[in-house]
Image (cartoon, rainbow, N blue to C red):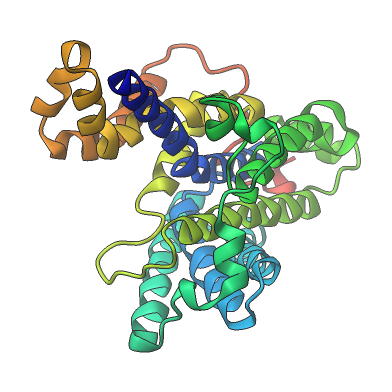
Length: 334
């Protein structure tokens, strides 16, 4: 009986961790989808999330307010989006180079600020509002349901916010007039321009919004890791790059991004839970313990590479991919 309970607990924690440690992918993916639907390819997701993480966390701690932390993650990441928009929309800079530069700059700024504070870096445990806000919330009755209650109804508030943002973004893109205009810009900006759509304004607004959403994801990851700053690895730790591939996997649909997050999260969670699964189910999953830990660490990125290679080999373009994504729009060439 105890063996069955332990096995059930192991499965529950595995599923719980899929959501806890990977919902950040949903923020990054949805933010990038909104950006790409405007016809802009922003490869700066990793850096934008890192900027949102460090400034959101610091300001949240200094004010002992989770809401202010979220606000500053939005503002700081939104400024990264503003910079990207200015360089690529106004100055017509190469989108790929600009995005990569923002990634490098954002991660560098994360380490610069964090290491600069040194021993003065705030410990999350010293700020009650932040620590309590990062804890899972209890939903009467629902949280008490076996397995499902722990996995779905006992999560941090930002998990539910992330899912809500994904659903709202899906509704916005699919069923609203501004969303239709945005999709038109991503497909054929010249045609949208001829119909009176302000291309520049739409691009600026949605690039900034997309970046702001990424920033919330970075802040969330800082909370999950309890603000434990290390000089060797960033809180986002490559999630931004996976999110870019997840956009393709989700076919540029914020709703499908929820499913994609769970699938990618499954492979990502194997890094930390493979040993527990092998011990709980030795007859079926005992072989998991024989796989080198380095393989589990590389697995999410291997899946990412496979998705990107598979997409590049497609003979037919994904019908949901914006036709003008990554291409600067010159109004004079219309």
